[in-house]
Length: 109
Image 1 (cartoon, rainbow, N blue to C red):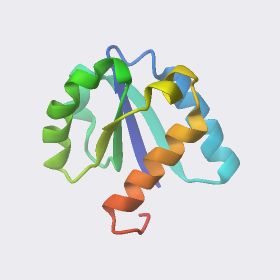
Image 2: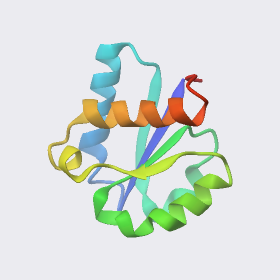
Image 3: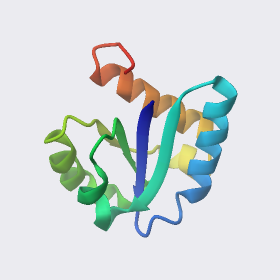
Image 4: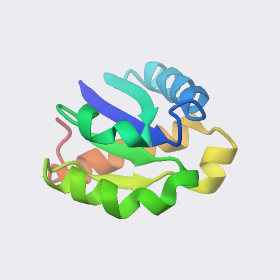
């Protein structure tokens, strides 16, 4: 199972996106766990995580997130603003799975 975490200012604005990503994963038969948390709590939620995505509203936190995630070998990026605004769970899920694949040398864990 792949574990994907989304972070935003308070962990609430991404909850709808998480729901849509979970639905897309279920439709594709992907074995994933997806959760959202406030960016301030990032450090305590990184154990066992495969991919971290930041909401576009906290793009400013990317350098801090990269530092925290690189220590654990976790790829991190910002969700595309258009995909976020449209709440396109399928596209965001595809991005997360691609990041996971790329970080594992082309092999999904």
